[in-house]
Length: 173
Image (tube, rainbow, N blue to C red; front, side):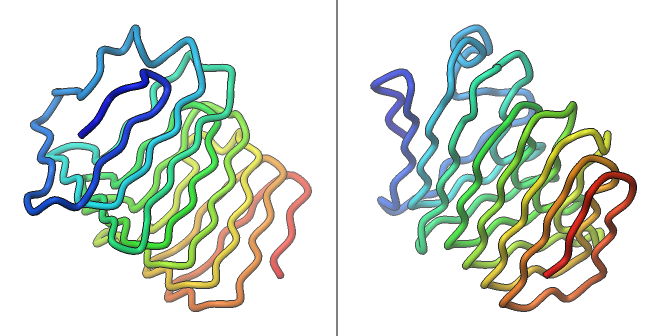
């Protein structure tokens, strides 16, 4: 794990995965909030609670990149409470959700890898007030539930689940 420079966090495959204990953070919350972050994962991040947590209070759009050798696991693999671009070429998995989005903003998820949730909901917008875009050319094991907001799902891969789009201007391609 390399937290320097402070705007970028990198986890590289160097033998052992990075394990995050419940409520333990690699960086202090005050450091995360005021700016957009780029998180690059080419190794393993395993969280007892969340693999990657992107806190609220950040008006900018952060970027999370999971490389082909990357893996993120937790109750929620990725939990984003502010706007983010998530690009997955590896594996994102969670016992509850692969990716959970909350509290509005704009989220773009580009998946050429695999996103899986044991609960059956791979990608969920909890509050349903975000504008979400999902571009899948990989495998999504579980439902996609984006609720309200203006949402778009483009699929050229495999979705082993249902796609739920509710109120708003939505499209499924």
